[in-house]
Amino acid sequence: MAVLASATLIYAGACLMNDAWDAADDARTRPNRPIPSGRVSQGLAATVGAIFLLSGALLTPKLIPVLLPVFGYGLFHRQFAGFSSIVMGLCRAILAVCVSWLAWRTTHFDDLYLPTPWFLFYVATLWLYVSAISWVAKDEGSKPSRQSNVGIMLAALPLLDAAFLLPAGAFLAAVAAVGCFACAMGLRHFAMAT
Image (tube, rainbow, N blue to C red; front, side, top):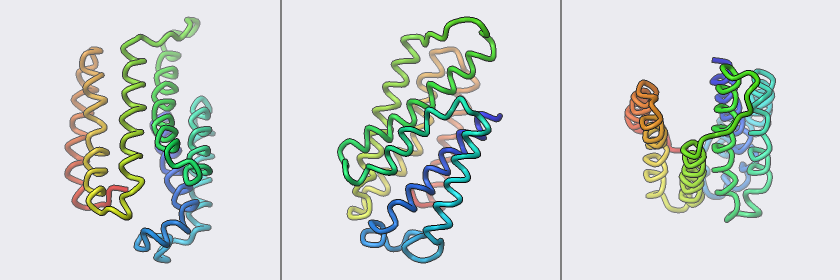
């Protein structure tokens, strides 16, 4: 449970920090977002984001490697727009590797962690898929039709997890992932995609 809470805090913190870093650009392209519209201050978003990131890292220090691409993306994605989508995918891929390593360590204390080729294929696919979501999302402010595409792509992410969990023998986890997809599709009607 600590890993789930930690990953959630890191993800939420990264989202808040990204919104704070993008406030000036969002004021031009997406003025209805919380910071440009004045509903949330840039300072508050940055402060809460930093607290979430720090809390997630302190709760599960083994997830600290995820912070490097998170900060790299946040600080440089505007300057290197083509490269930033790849870094966003890397954030999710590194998280998958860290969580897998932590799960491995709970049962194999002295063994060397060697991920299976199937897991490495999953991580590479996850990296590409999240990179694609990020690439499509980067223009959603100027192309409103993309917002729906991003929402569907985000909602479908658990299906990717299920597609790799089922052949690996994790039937209940695959069913849970499909349930997450159903919930995400239902919630799309109540929240913006990004």
